Length: 248
Image 1 (cartoon, helix red, strand yellow):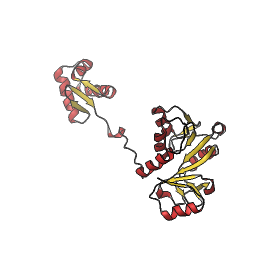
Image 2 (cartoon, one colour):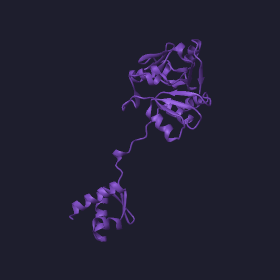
Image 3 (cartoon, rainbow, N blue to C red):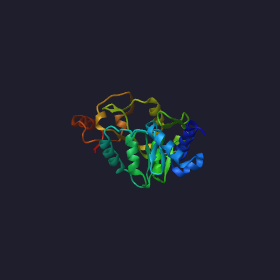
Image 4 (cartoon, helix red, strand yellow):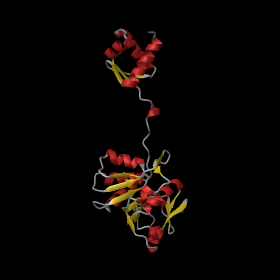
C-alpha cells in the first residue's frame, strides 16, 4: 500500500471512528509501528489529523461547527418569557408560535403540567428533549427556511383549543400587532382562533413600529408583556387605548 493511499485510508477511518491508537492503525492498515507513527506525524503537520499520545484524532472542520445563534436583546427577552410563564396554570393548554422568545418561554415551561401546542419545530424538539410530557405538534409540511409546519388544510388545527396563545411580531402600535412574514402569519391565523386569551411577547425595541402587515387589532390583544426598557410615552399611549401591559 503506497503512502498516498494509506493516508487516504487512515483519514477515512478517523472520520468514522474519530480517534485511533497507534496499535489500531498498525492493525487496520497492516503497517509497522514506525510507519504508523510517520503517517500520523505527516498528516498532523498537514493539519489533516491531530496527533495525540499513542495515536491520532480526527480534526473537526470549522465548516461543520455552527456558530451559536445570537439572540438580540436576549436578557430582556428572557425576563419577558419568565413573566409569561408565571401566567400559566397547571392543566392549561397553551399555543406557542415561533421565535427566540417562544423558545425561552418553552424552556421556562418545560416539565410543568401543561399541554403545549406549536408548529415551530425547534421549540417542539426542545420540549421533547427536555422530556416534557404533553407536546402537540401541528401537522402539515415542514418549511425548512421558516422551521415551521405549514398546512392549507386547517381541519387538524380546529380540534385543538387553548387557554392562551403566546405570540410575537415585528412591531406594535395603537393599531395592533404587525408581522412581516405572511407565510407564518397565515399559519398562525387559524391557531389564534382557538385560544381564549391572546398574549403578545415583544421586546421594547419593537414598540411604536408599524412594520409589515397588521396581524391583530389592538382591541383583540388581551395582554402585552414587554421589557421595562420600553418608552414610557408609548406604554402610556397603549394603556390609554385599553391594552393591559406587564413590564418585565
